Image (cartoon, rainbow, N blue to C red; front, side):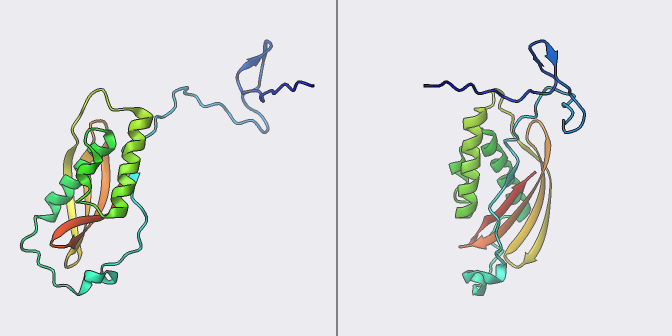
Length: 177
């Protein structure tokens, strides 16, 4: 029976048997100047890609009553703040289930769970704060909003699409940068 020894290729800048390996030259990429790797961004999120159009939905023939609905700007801000808190591990993602479409909720819950498994819950709980909301009505019953939110560490931009479903606003697309 023969034994096989596995060897790893040399890492640029590391020494092997007292010989320093080159850090630059043909075919060798320069080593980064900082040794600190950027951590995984737990808040960055892009919901599932949708190609839906408001006119394509089954409920497009229904009349839309916007009088009984809350202000879409305030609603979009509250939704994005809650989504950021869920992604940070400060809020259960299940609290967002009735505000999001099924596909969007599955994606957000999966991402939030992954963030908690990889990074754990934050030691210091910082509430997200909405700084600015801008709403644009696409067609009656469909709005898109851009939201600037501070997650406790960074200012972030978010985009959300809200559609009237069964007499209330429901998010069908969400992206947080």
